[in-house]
Every structure is written in structure tokens, then in C-alpha cells.
Image (cartoon, rainbow, N blue to C red):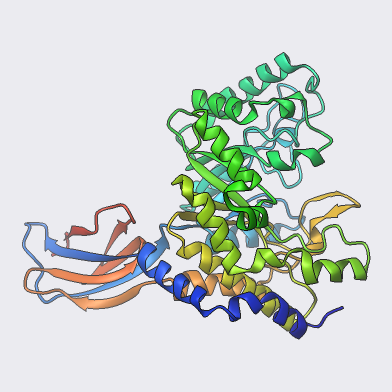
Length: 451
């Protein structure tokens, strides 16, 4: 097997040898994630607070750094469940909530919405997830309304009319419960990978599948953000551009008036998920997934899909650890830093969702597909952070973070440049919270009522 040093030379070569990429990343972050803020502090009578020290500290990002929440209360030990609840809110401000049909309704007409529903591994009940997220200020998104791979066995999968009726029933039920409660709804997922499924229904064969799914979603979620999501398309889009399958899929749908609000792109480096021997693994490590770690190709992919002018989201991220020990963890952390920096800098990307956060608790389909083999977690099996988790936290809370102290002028103003997000201001021990968004007001008055 290749050493960590050899792998670093392979996997970091593209980023290290193209300094112009770092310039684009730096400029992109400065232009797209920060703004100039002008704030006037006044007392409750409207008088400016002159020559007053104001401390400010960014508490959260407008940009969504998310993860799936499939392991909420899913560990065997109570202390691990408690640890998960602390870790998730410490690292993430968005949760992908599972709505896989086979896990949500394993028995017909017995859906598992409520928080005390019977357990299904890696499929915590939606209300359990919603309650936790609401208590901790974490936004939620739904995954996924129409995903014909994970469907319950009781469905009449060969009957088109019945499948359409039951899908509509499913969407109506979900709408009745979750309209207005989530920031976005993934409508359809992985249609370009459906040729590999063996559990799908006649729905997958619909020629107008995207149009049908989105129009149905628009009927029941008329005011929600509706997302298309696709996997395995990164290199194809980067290399083929407007002639890639995903670009053509989206273009075709939009030309037919399909109400797509946002484009989702998976970014799984599932290195080792299918490897049976050391030789197979080494071949994959050296060649198969290199394009997924090249910042230049990531920019090409984003710029191509950005031609539609819709927001972009990196919906599912896996970054492998190629071996045991600090050097292999450092490589995973460096790949993470390079990729997250590209995504954070791009003007149309507003969300990045890491997928399997913990080694050993990933999806296993059969002997031919085991995502645990990738060792793609940010945390070890015992829930202790790997260097990748430490890197992500450093980026979010240190490198991409704003805090400081300034003294108001004669008119009560302070001015500073900072990252978009929620801020806490401290004026004479009084705490005031204010939010600054990319498209929001950046010149505001804040009232210090204690004065």
C-alpha cells in the first residue's frame, strides 16, 4: 500500500501546483462571504452612544455547514447518544433529516413521524430530529421526497397508476406536517444512478420523471425551496461541461418549466467502498477519484452548473482516510480544507453537507458496497475527533470568523468588515444580537436599553 507521503503527493498535487486557484479562493471568500457593516448604537430615547466600547463576536454563519442527522439517538450507549447531541450542534448549523420511504413507512399506513416511533437504524423519526434541531438553533432540510431506490416492499411497484397515487399521498402527508418548518426539500435524487438500482418501481421509468416529481412537489409545497440532487456527476460535469448528463438533465427540465429552485451535487469520495483486495484499493486510490480532489475541476463543475443562475449546494460529502495514523488523518484534513475552501468561495454555493460523520456507522448495502471501508468520518468510531473534524472547526470558528472591539464615534457608529452571520454585541455588559446576510441590510441601528 502507498505511504501517506506518496498519497499526499498524488492527492494534493493539483492544489499545491496551481497558485492561481488559491488566489481565486481568497478573493471569492472576501467578495462572497463578507460585507461592510455600519452600526449605530443608540439609547432607548434614540440618542447616540458616543465614545462607547463595543465588543462584537460572530456566533454563527449565514452559510450552512451541515451534516446528516441519521445517528441521532442511534448509538448503543446512552453516553454516546449524549455525546452526539453535543457534537452535532458544536459543528453544524444544518441537518439533513431522513425521509426515505422504506424507513418512514415500513408498514403501510403506519408512518414513523412521531419522536417515539419504533426504531429503524439510521432513520431517526423526523419529529425527534426536528425537536432536537429546534432546541439548538439548527436548520433542517428534507431528504428526499421522490427517491425510488429506498421504497417499502408493500408498494405495488409494477402498477403506474397506483404508484403515482401513493406518491401523491406521501407528499400530501409530508406537506401537512412539514410545510414551513424546513429551509428546503430535496425533491428527487440520483436519477442518473438509477440504472444500478434493483428496488425501484415503474416510477423510475417515467420519461417525464423530473417534471412529474417537481410539479407534484410544487402542488403540495408551493412556497418551499425545491432541490434537485444528483450523485456521481462531478467529474462528468467538470470535463464535459454543458454536454454532461447532469447539465443536460437540468436544462431539459427547466426548458419544460420544471420548478427547480436549487441544484444539489453530491461529492462522495467513496474510495474503497467496493474494493475486495489491496490491489483493487490501491488502484482506486491512485486513479479513480483524483478528479474529486482537484480544486480546479471543482470550480469547473460549479461554474458549469452555475450557468443556470440557481443556488448550488454540495449535498453529500465523503472524504476518505487512506490508512491509520496521524499522517493519513492529516491528508484527509488537507483534502477537506481544499474542497471546503473552493465551495465556501463560490458565489452560488450556500450550503455544504458532510455525510457520514463517524467511522463505522455508515451505509452498508451488501458485500459489494460498504461505505465503512472508506473511513470517511470526521470522527473515530469512539466519537473522538479526527484531524478533519479539527480542521473543519478551525475553518468555521477561526479562519472564517469575525470578532473584535471598537469605540463608537460622536454619532454612535462603528464600522467593520466581517463574515455574514449572526453577531453578538456587548455594550456595557448588555448583549445585543443582530444578523447580517449577504442580501440583507448592512447599515442598522441597535438600541442599548440599559443606557
